[in-house]
Length: 203
Ligand code: ADP
Ligand code: 5GP
Image (cartoon, rainbow, N blue to C red; front, side, top):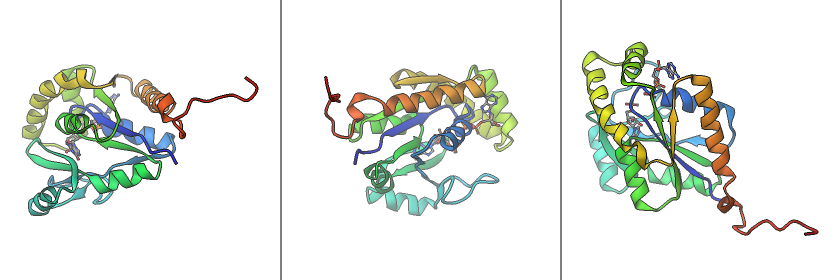
């Protein structure tokens, strides 16, 4: 069986990554979301084990020291990490896996060269629109929003490192493009199960 493909998605907080990923996952088969571990407190409506594995600082540090994370980073004052075991198990089953991680984590995965992933950066149309979306979401304090906006400028500079840059202006258009990226990546020649070129009968 062919290995699954790893998709790495990064975006400044509030760009609409969660919204886009939920849509793409609902509309395409064989895609699994890698549930990260975090020390951040759950937001209203977030479910432990679905949105994140919410863990204590102590538990996170113990997992990190055991090498349980494929990558981990401190983002906006909280720790986040990707379970190495969960991701590798899903890829081995032929499932395509989505990592929703920040630019630092993406740089670690890219540098490790352990897995050949497709890197996608999602950008808001402007900083003013990013602020509107963060405020409109009504999940973060003014202080948190300020911190996220300051980090956004830094994160945007990392966009050039990614294979794809997706502008999330009109939602429906962005969903269409994101689905096209996933489908195109699945069709890359090196993804053929045998790894051999296709030879058509009769040619
Ligand atoms: P992220 O996961 O990147 O932090 P969210 O998916 O939570 O961002 O989106 C932030 C807010 O912006 C949400 O209220 C969401 O409904 C809204 N949003 C997402 N995409 C768009 C879009 N294309 N146009 C307008 N609002 C959007
Ligand atoms: P939020 O707190 O808004 O859910 O996420 C904040 C940021 O942390 C986002 O940029 C998100 O992509 C990132 N993030 C979530 N999980 C992980 C992870 O496992 N590793 C890294 N490096 N970043 C993560």
